[in-house]
Length: 370
Image 1 (cartoon, helix red, strand yellow):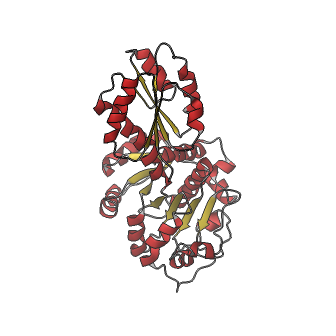
Image 2: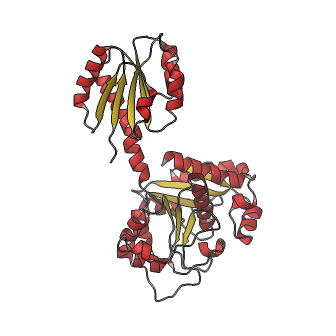
Image 3: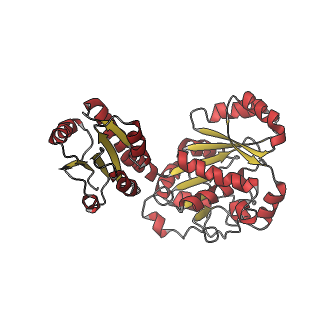
């Protein structure tokens, strides 16, 4: 693990001494370096994460231009300190990319709080983001567009992040993800879930097929299915943990016909996308399904086939469900039909339509939030 660095550039010995004494109360591991003059060459000696404390005043104000360039490197996290009580300097420092601005003399509580905040942002958050996310799509009835929603969301996440994204189809119907994207399936969902017991098993298995030239991978049943084959639910947790080491996002289209699989998939998911149509009439049924099955999960309501002219109906849905709508997917049967008939995503057949743009924005929102 790389060493975390805290570096201070300040001509005042009293400030450097004060900072060094404060750092004795820092709980995270670090090495401390102190210098009089700012020297950007010292920052490029290692690729470690750094908190760089720089004194800025009227004599070296132009140093903010250098900081603006250096802060583009995610390893460099600047904390500007100054004797000057200038709102303009504070604003310019933050615009240059500094994580915080503090007035001298430094108050211990404020200084330590600032350091911890910067550390949490560049270390703790980064480590959290390395952990793969498991998303599951659910609905209370068939035909709401859940699978089409998943395909387009997954493809956008793969395109925007450049990371490997895995779609797992637990449905046993013939109209599964592999057919909708024209992906050849050699080994089915049951095979992968039951076979992934140790990390080494991943490399031993047949290569997971991917969609076209993207980083979107597919596990589905295709024509490789048998009524006698059953998913080993007890191994599902283990299999997902192994897959999470190889994919940034794992997105599951769950089997609504199997309560056991449904329950376990929900338990193991970070987020549940509950897809409902705008024409929904059974509000109470949906609310009961949400409260009963997903009460303790992070549920995000997706309103599919949305029409702006029916906003009153949307308000009614929100009131009845007592939950906010997380995202609205516009209604466009022609575009959806064209994508399905050509075994492509919506953006590939109609990139300028609102329905395609909604998935682009949805992916961006998911990435930014999660």
